[in-house]
Every structure is written in C-alpha cells, then in structure tokens.
Image (cartoon, rainbow, N blue to C red; front, top):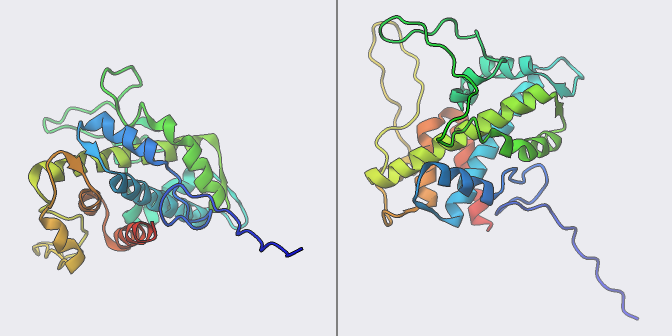
Length: 257
C-alpha cells in the first residue's frame, strides 16, 4: 500500500488572508454587513465587508496589545484601567469615542462637558431607542472580542469585554456611515491626521502618499459600497502607524483571497 500524504492542517479563516489564528479576522462578514444595514440602504460588496472587518480587527488588536503592555508584568487578565492606560499612551487607538459616554470606565475622565451655551451635557442614558445604534448592537461583537483576546494570549474581565464590544461597534458604525458618505460625495477630501506645531503657528497638513491620493476620487456606481470606499473611510478615522498597518492588512488579505 502507498502511504497517503499528510493533509495540511486546516486554519480558522473568517476572511481572505487569515492564515493563522492570531491573524484571523475576529468579525464575520455577516456581522459587518448587518452593521452597514443599520446605517445605510446601500449594497455592501463582499470585498468591502472583508475590508471593514480587517480594519476593525486591526484596530481592536492594537488596543488589546496596548492594554496588555499597560498591565502589570505577568498579569494576563486585563481590566478596564489597562484600556484607559493604553489610550492615554497612544492617541492613535482612541477610536469609537461615542461609546465613552455609555461606559463607567470613561465616565468623568473628560471632566464636565458643556454645550455652546455653557449648559452641562448629561451623558446619554440606557433607555430604548427606535433607531438602531452602535450602543444597542454592541453585544453582537462579544464572540469576536473574546476570540481576539484568546489569540493575543490574554483574557479580560466582563467590564472590559463590554468596553471592547462597544468600541468595536461604535468604530464600525462610524466606518459604515463614512463609507456611505464617500459613495454619495464621490470620494474623500479630508484625511485623519495629527500634527504638532508651536502655539500660534498654523498647522501644516502632512503630505499624502500616492495610496491615499488615489482614494480622493471615487470610481464605481452610486448604489454599492466597495472596498475602496471602506479604505477611504478608514483614512478619516485613523492616522499614523495604525492607519498604515490597517490599510496594509486589508491589501494583504484581499490579495491572498
């Protein structure tokens, strides 16, 4: 009898290019499309859903890694203060900020918030709303968040899992809204950035590389959100190294599809 060759081990693939558990996309395309449906009637292409899942997964992985570094040496169970420390140390991972007003973790950290007339703004409550929101849908991300934590070699207390759920939901909801805006406006005219200048000096916008310039002008029909629309929306929310890594991961995952 001829020996049969060993079969290659199967990998957990939730999207293109997810060749290992550590790099697998934590959020399924079906979940991404559900979030997009909450905010826009536009059709979402398969590659756009993968791109949005990849960007969101990259952002959450960066946040978890930052929290892991902020934790005391040897502690593998993360707590909310690790998340706060991670964001304090790296402004690039301050995303999904609409969740902050709903979370005890962030309550009071920004001081008293007032509107244009000086009236104190009361944080939003938890009553029911007729309109689907990132907060109401945050629980949908729990399985993906727990899988991402396992893949990064850590665990988290329930309060931190809830915060990561909320941040993921808020970020992806914002991404969906801006991807729809890109379709409507035919491209993107502004890009997320942070620049340091001396007091009184005008801020100088950083030069755009060629990969970002191509996103300034949209191609395609006006009824479908495509991969490039998601990438363009990503440039509105991310900057610096995390933006480069997110865009590079999308490019790699779609190339290996």
